[in-house]
Amino acid sequence: MKFRGPIAVSLLAIGVSLGLGGAVQAQSITQALTAAYDYAPDLQSALLNAKATAENIAQAKSGKLPTIGASISGSQNLSLNNGDWTSSQSLTTGLSYNQTIFDNGQTDAQIEAARAGAEAAEYQIRNTEQNVLLEVVQAYMNVLSGRQLVALRQENINFYQAQLQSARDRLEVGEGTRIDVAQAEARLAQGQASYRSAVGGLETSVATFQRYVGAKPGSLSTTHNFNRLIPRSLDAAISEAETGHPAILAAKAAIRAAQAGSDVAEASFGPTAKMTGQIGTSWTGPNGGPRDGITGSLGFNITVPIYAGGAIGSSIRKANLQQIKSEVDAMSAYDQIRAAVISAWAGIQSADAQISAAQSAVNAGTTVLNGVIQERDLGTQTTLDVLNSQAELTTAREGLINASSGKVIATFSLLAAMGRLTAQDLGLPVEIKTAVPYTQAVEDVWAELRTIED
Image (cartoon, rainbow, N blue to C red; front, side, top):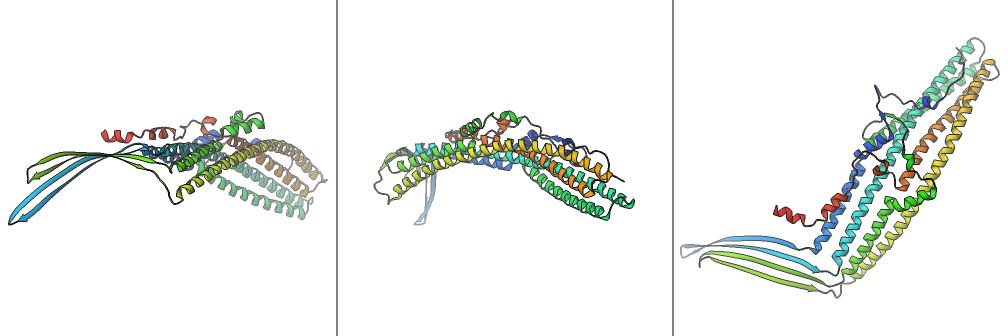
């Protein structure tokens, strides 16, 4: 049997997904991102961390508010004297009040630091969100391109099997040689090894996809409408990243927190004034008759530090260094984001060029392979020439698959570098994970008292 006729090559054939058993539900990039957003443990962890950080606000604000307590105590006393038992009881109740009325602004600075920390934690949610969604896109495209490579390499095996059979048929009729058969057998073995390698890579990609999305991938497609978020120029992309990337916004919040921390250290070496109050009543009986009484006291305490063994000066210097460090970290964040934008932008341009070159190579390779097969059948080319032409075409087709996948990943990488790879920017149908409502709730420090009253 001879392998004759032109070979039709299309991206549609390359993109056929492997069957998963039964009907497979279509799954777009948007659907995968939506499922991952609801499932991602890393994102849930960032949300919980932001809520826990918000509690620092309530704890800091408690420094300016009073602490009120109630107490009750009692005793029963028995004594034996000359054969007679006597007893007495006592009961005491009271309320206490303590409040710092002046601390040189230390508590106000602590509140500001806590609020800045909560804001930074909120931006960290957005940063984690971007990282998770980008990893989902990468896993999605790895599965899609992995399936395409498996399908392509299976097609390659089929081709080599046909060439091997053709070589054997030609040998039987005296038109071929044993060398042709051996070369076809070797290429078939290489093709089978490449196929198994592609299957292994696909299995790994599927496991990674399931880790992020929480479900196995269905029938995937590269179709999306997120290119509308890409600006028309690199300068516009950099400008947008510098003003809206969550990592940069978190760095700015960290500077505020460090500045407030410096204020806390400076305020700690200053006078403080506290006020205390107590009121209570007591009852004693029966010996001497019952007696009821009400007692109360009101006091204050003013403390002026004079020398703290160098601890205060050290704390101030440390806080100032941390403030400088936060500013340096912010500069580093700017540089990293800017570099990420430029890299992603260049990645898109490079992917476009690679796709164009690979498509041309596929078209040319298809023409060459068809021609070489026809010439081999006429005796002017050898089986080795056919095998080499097929290998070159397969390499070009694999390059097209990789370039197409790289273009999608580079597009989403640019969105992430700009700070636009968020559920809100993408318009995902999800409830946005944010700690803002929780932070607003913990600002109400009187809620604890109202709970007691209820």
